[in-house]
Length: 382
Image 1: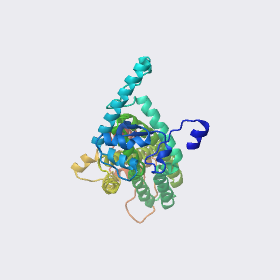
Image 2: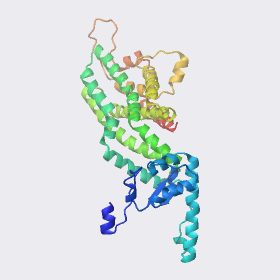
Image 3: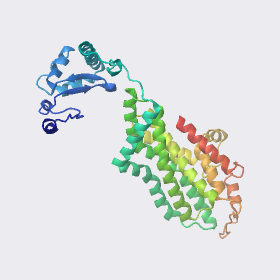
Image 4: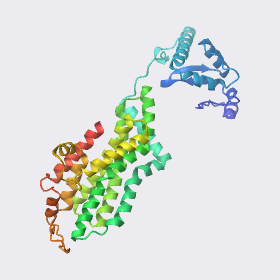
């Protein structure tokens, strides 16, 4: 870079955190930035120590002056002192240059401000979307982290349950497969743990510096998340329904996609809630795992005769509506089963299975899907 400056006369700007002492003399000017992008020093490298001393800082000794400066400005009070000193000098230099050569007011730099105004929504969203595209391009593992849990689950489950027949034993297999599908809620939380904590830390730093508000980050995160989750839910549902022999007409297939997408999305929402309150990922996993187990067990396939208070609480669980939508579409009245076992009890139709599960009067498929969508909006808003 130094060669480009000397031979070609090109101005070169290098963003570097803490250059080594032997590299520091290679820079003609140093621009030291503090929290919020505020200028703390601008000038020749040899003047850094003089500027620090003018603010009353102790001597750095023989160490790297920029290492010392970075440690110093970690203290907000020192950062404020240095920014104030630079502001005073910049204002004085601006007045002197104006006196020597008047310029239109539109061409003058405004005085340094003490706080930043957040970017407008369109600008913030454009920058955040560009950065997200760049991150996914540079780190393909982020896409794999969002896709792997659900896709690998399908790869493991299909050989266990396929093909489903119409015997009495197949009823148990169908219920077991649908019950396992509700567990995708936990996969959504794992997707969140793989990506969100890093995004959260960057977001907290940038909002603390006043760069943008919460809404642009929220919208961009949801857009990228829903795009990937929608594709994963569609692929996984086709694999599951077609390979296992579940009901595969339009309504059951679309319902399976909707349940998978809502489960992953709500799992992400649960992860966001916990990871926004608790900074320890390990503790969050333990709490989320316990919550997801309870939600899955009480959804309706395994526990359909609970005390009334638990049933009331269960109405805030999205998996209850997912369970009902799956049951209504996968056990239609015209689905018939063979009475091939020695047991005197025989479930001949899908209606008999719904009666056994206490799901004959749980509303319509569309009504449960609508409640599932409402739960997605509410949990994400939290």
